[in-house]
Image (tube, rainbow, N blue to C red):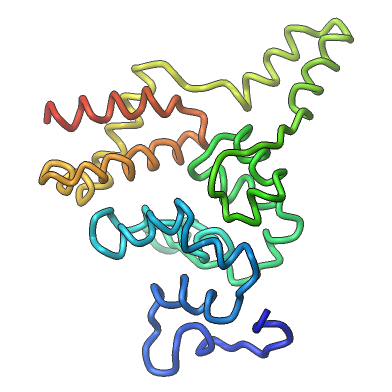
Length: 231
């Protein structure tokens, strides 16, 4: 890896005269890191989404760059301002080692808990930059349920597991989330109605993020399409 032992400053990634965040999000990373995971990024589904965003085929925030995962965003509302602030977490150690630390702030922005844990447990899939489906299976979630059941706490087991793993499938609940996503992403709505069907995927992702990956993605897709086509 070319980056090993290198001293980095802000201009190492952003450039000396122009802070180009798009260049810093991918090119600055792949220009130094050439390990298998980084090299595989260019043929990954994440990179395909990133290219579509850069080409204007998808709304801002829908692509997945190196920075999306390894320099995640922290969102908070400033107490002295009636506005949300987004800061980039430049400390990679905050979520890189161990990789399980990425599940909640990164993976579950788009994916469910089960898929996220399985994907990170599959060393070959990680090396291939998530090109394909997980072949590993993390059984600890099921083991927790069995433990409760063996102690004759079936109802508690069901409650605990369903709290974190059950899908949100209720139409009225999803409809409220969908209306919120449509109202706060007017650009994506306009792109979809102008003929860019790929914008639908971005809106699905916003709803999935709002539910921490718990919503039924097919249900969300169908309800979103119905709402967009009827509007």
